[in-house]
Image 1 (cartoon, rainbow, N blue to C red):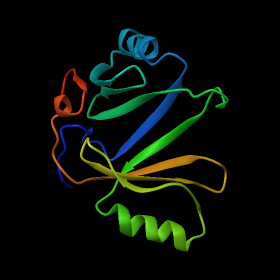
Image 2: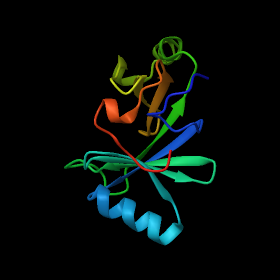
Image 3: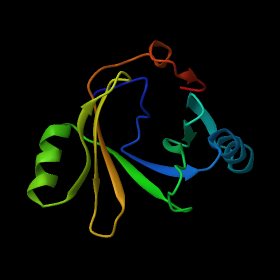
Image 4: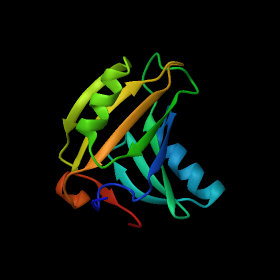
Length: 136
C-alpha cells in the first residue's frame, strides 16, 4: 500500500463522532494515553494508539449521539466502489480525490453503518493542506 504522511498507516481506522473534537481528542490522549498524530482545523483529529490509529470527527447537527463509522484503507478505491455498486449498496459519496492525497468514497451498509474506503494516491505533507502535525 502506498505511504501518505497525511494518513495513518493502519488498515482499519475507526472514526468516532464527538460534539467538540478538540476536547474529545484531549480527553482521549489524557485518559487513554493516545497521542495526536494530526489536527485538521477544529473538525477532525487523527490519534495514534499503539501501531494503529483512530479519527475523532465532528458530530454534525442531527447526527445520532453515538454515530460512528469505519475507515478502511484499500489499494484501489474505484474498483472497490464498483464492487459496492454491484452489491446494491447505498453510496453516500462517490470516489473523490482530496488534497491530502487520498481518493475516498463512503457507503452505507445494510444496518445503516457508514464505511469510508480510502486509497492513498500521493504522499502529501499535512502542512501542504493546512494540517497541524503532532507525532507522525
